[in-house]
Image (tube, one colour):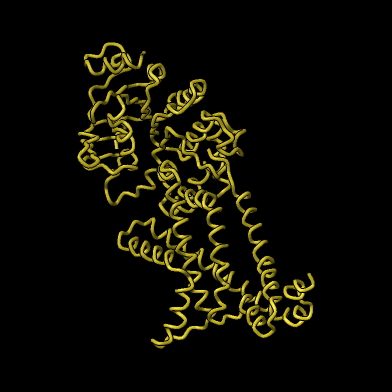
Length: 247
Length: 224
């Protein structure tokens, strides 16, 4: 593998639910250390695209390659690959019956086969990265939404992923809690994490994104730098959508 | 008043029947424990099989569950106890009652467990699978612990209700608590043994009810 080959390579990805075609042939390559934002109206297929990247959804056609491994290949150990593809959800999805620490150590112990002691060391390091080491013994219900989302980020980070997928990570948060989550994501981007982010936090995208992808009706309409997409897009559909975000 | 005491709390009857009542209590406890352990285990097992989504197997489970929930346990006890010997299979009465009640409890428990598994939010599966957890690990460490907390109240109620049916042993001669009492009643023409049996049932089941409430509180967790 050469240094230039993408960490995440999506080719001609298609997915339908019944007669409803959600993804109509998506091509997208994300290189190491890149932060790519995907924006677009609801129903445009953004979340489905993200969920195809770790095979929470099975595509109908096309390939998704992560770090050189074709996820659709029957010989691929999908669980071993998923460990390398972190995912953060809109609704956090922390395990409510487990303390923050145990939320993080579960996959370390069951998937990475670490001992409890080793897993706790790694989990604590991940908690420190999101600034919540002191909450390690808290249950999710005892935490604010912003804190829960940061724990969820730590849960994915602790597995040392090659790429992180964020599915509207701040949409379920009260406005005053959004900043703490975005700050953690900025740190990760700066530290060189490869990130694919479905989000409409435009100001954050301007600062953190290397590239913005605009999707509509299951196709990528255009992509470019934040300045190009938010500033002077040539596409009427992009301009219309961006102007709505600004309101 | 004197007549009331004589009928329901006759001292000489108590003295002559309490050993039998006690041995009946032991049988009832043995039966109840066997039914609870095997019934709940089999019910959970069926619910787990159902998560594998194998169509034919699921249909079979649904039929089993619906039939057992619809039939009165007494009908099944009579059919098996009096019917099976005609085809050359004679089971001890204790075994018949245990089998029937365990199967009925398994049927109800399967439905309760299954509903509980379904009510765990989709996002919990997504989160667990996205970290590389296998399907069985996701069930065991993420979904079932939440399921069990959720289903504990209906499960405890149903378990107590079905376990009390051990009294059906009376009709096929299992020497359990009620059977000992009714036998004594027919010999002595006095209702005192029935009162003793009622007290026996309270001694067995009140702690179970209390244990159930304790379990519910112990395992309750605040929803995220």
